[in-house]
Amino acid sequence: MFTGLVESLGTVRSLADEGDAKRVVVEVPPSFLENAPPSKRLGESVAINGCCLTVVAADGVLWSFQAGHETLAKTNLGRLRIGDSVNLERAMPADGRFGGHIVQGHVDGVGRVAAIDSRIDFSDYTFEVSAVLAAQMVEKGSVAVDGVSLTLVRVTATSFQVMLIPHTLAVTTLGRRKVGDEVNIETDVLAKYVAKLISGARHE
Image (cartoon, rainbow, N blue to C red; front, side):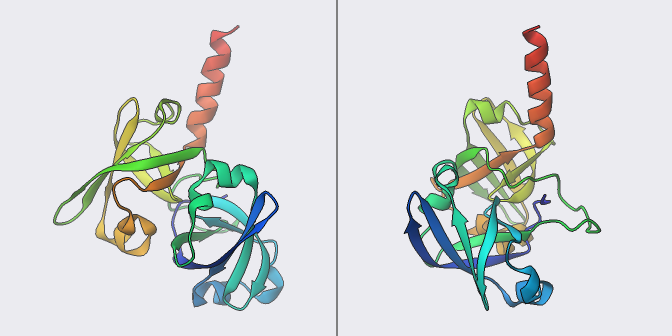
């Protein structure tokens, strides 16, 4: 489980096809090495742009991950290019501080940046999403965009708006996104369960 508080940015250093999957090699920051001794790096779960992947190899600052066909089809990881920056977050330890919201690292789909309204102290970002995803969002609720925990300011049938402070823009990939860019979307898991329960009640 993750919390949507991005720890750092990594850089994609290589991409290689492995059948219908892809190996993604990311250069991680020194802080990742400090917090993870060599014996505990392999098999660790790391959210890459909000998508939970497993470390399959670690050579110094170069960590390798395998993304399966389902991941490549339903997230923006299939469109990564060498040199791209990605958001990184380790799985939350049992004694860790819960600063964001419950993020599973299971991306529900992709959205697109529809508009960016930059102001003096913050920026309003509007994202287009499917009606299915929008139905699982509520104003003042939470959503993970490229793995970043954000508060929903406004929700329509096919879009939502968030307000990003300068810190978030500076330390995550969201500050580099442009209109038209794809982003990974994970809706609040609690909203999914409520929707499932309501749907089941209607069919009884």
